[in-house]
Image (cartoon, rainbow, N blue to C red; front, side):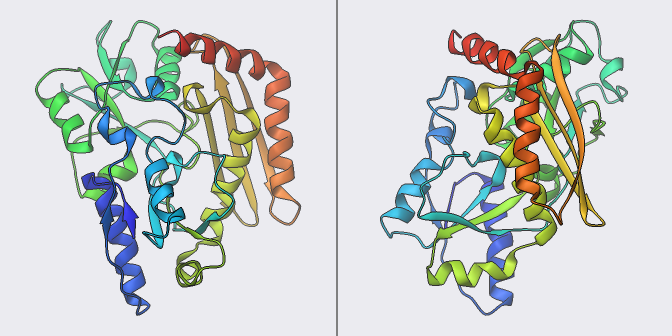
Length: 305
C-alpha cells in the first residue's frame, strides 16, 4: 500500500489498513516521496502540474511495485491513467475549513486586525479570504500539519486556515473556529480519503468493501463540476455537495484571485437521475456566467508569479 510520508498521509493510510485488517486483509506500507513533498519552499501553484502529490505513487502502481494507494481525494487530478481507478471512497470527514488565530481571543475573520497576516497554500482560500476582508495580507503556508501549527505559534502568521478533517484525523485539538460553509465554500473532495487500485485487480476487489455510497456520490459530483470548469489547482474554485434523502445540495463558485468578482450556483440534484450529467451541466453554466473569464484570468495571474 503506497502513501506519502507525511504524518497526516501515514495516519490516513493507517485508517485504511485498520479497516482492511477488520476484513481479514493484511497490508504492508510503502512510503513514496512525491514532488509536492520535495519542493516545500515553493507555493503549490509554482509546481508543475496538478497532481504533484500523486504522480510518483501512480508510477509505482503502474509498474507493479504497489497494489493499493491511499490519497486525500482533493489531491487527485481529474485526468488520470485509465488503468487506475478509485476503488473506495471512505465515509467523509468534515469538508470544512477552520481559522486558527495566534491571539486566542479572536473568534472570527471579522475580528482579525487590519492587514493581519493569514497563511494558506490554497488559491481558493486566498480568494475567499480577500472577498471577506480585502485588507488581509495573505501569505504562502507550506509544510506538514505540525509545521504549519508551529509557524503560527512562533508568530510567522497572525492566523492560518486549515482543513478541519486533518486536525481531527491527527487528534490535534487547538482552538479554532469553523468557517461558515456558505461564505467559505469548501474545496471539491475536501475531507475525503480514497483508495486507488488497478482496474480488475484482486486489490481492487478487496478494497471495494470500504466504499461509502453517499461519499462517492458527493465527491464524484464535485469532481465532475471541477473537471468541467478546468484550470487545475491555480483556479480559485469551490464545490461542495451534501447528500441527504436521495438528493445532493450543491454549491459551486469560481472567483477572481483577489476575490472581488465571482460566479456562483446552487443546485439540488436528484441521485435517481443521471446526477453526473447534471453536474457537468452545472459546470458549463458556471463557465457561461463568467467562469471562463475568471479561469483564464487565474491561469494568467498565477502563471506569471
